[in-house]
Amino acid sequence: DYEASIQAIEPVLAHGRNIRDKAPASYVCIVALIGQAKMHEALNMAMSVMEQLGEMFPVDPTEAEVKTAFNATKAFIQSASDSDVVTLPATKDATKIAVMRFAL
Image (cartoon, rainbow, N blue to C red; front, side, top):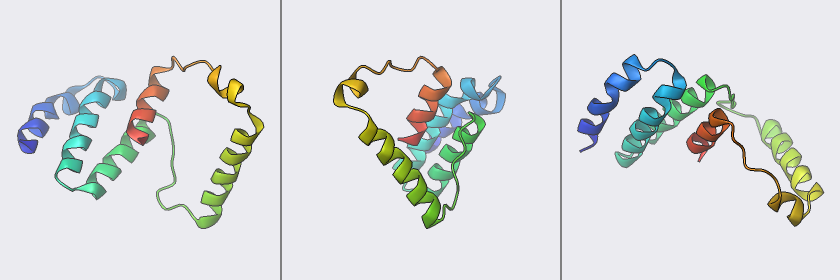
């Protein structure tokens, strides 16, 4: 029951000390919204959480912004060998890990 799960996490969202405390509850809420096909609400909530975690994404990126970001990512990937990528250390930054969870 989606409504029951959202009601169960509302106290965490209302009284959590900081966004890192609230992030797991926010994730559950987003999954519940997706399960109800409320994609716009889920996306808005995910964007808000990521912003509070310090990651800014344009809400309505222009084609030029998308191309610039794509080309920068492509250049980075092309400049690294497979062994470079495989040997990259996993991040231990809890905030970055939380952001990645919401970005997926």
